Length: 305
Image (spheres, rainbow, N blue to C red):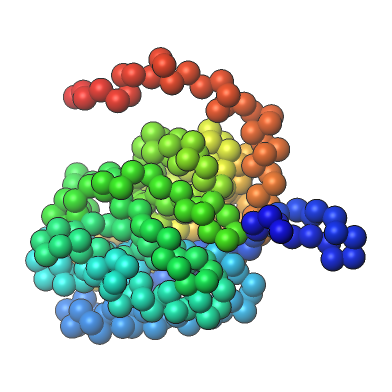
């Protein structure tokens, strides 16, 4: 049987390739001056519970928000937070999620703070297949350090693993993380690498970014003919309170239409069915990959101001 495709049992007829996906927008409820292990344990327990709810709802691919095991600590520059980092795939969070994926048959996108070696850290998402296999990781490429409260260069090196697409048992999955979404180049490469669904786990607050939240990623979906799952956290994180994490996580189809969206101000598991056959239908109409002219785009790869 072809990967991810269902067949009508009574006739053997091929039917739509539909994958039920979920995204989680959540809050950190533990005081940020608590021991780091307490913070991580509370968030992990919350997300394990939500994962159970997702399984009950028939979700087959589930993604958490950016650095889901704690608050968005980049609101300050403090070496204490280096202690949140873990090895991937050998750290405790990924190992736990491998067991969860295996026991429930669910594909998981697990964004956490990664330690490569002591003193070298990345903003990373691990991808785990439904049989528990670790498929690989994506490291955030574009690292902001330009707005009060987003001091990410203090914590992360820029990603160095390219723009991989992971062949899960259900779909070809790509990952782009938060600030990456402002850069169309990587979004295009994910499409060229075969992504069918691109997950963008984020931590973004109200203000300038909210206007772009529902513009840029639907544009990526249209330009590249794939589905996008955009994930944001919710609420205010004290004592920093750099703004309101406004949620509004959503799924967008290859036509650029947001067809399922979460609330602005509460924790939520958003579930939607993605008809992956729509990808071929849209690409056969809009032949953007056929008509692109890479030989004329050299300037994009040149160093500039």
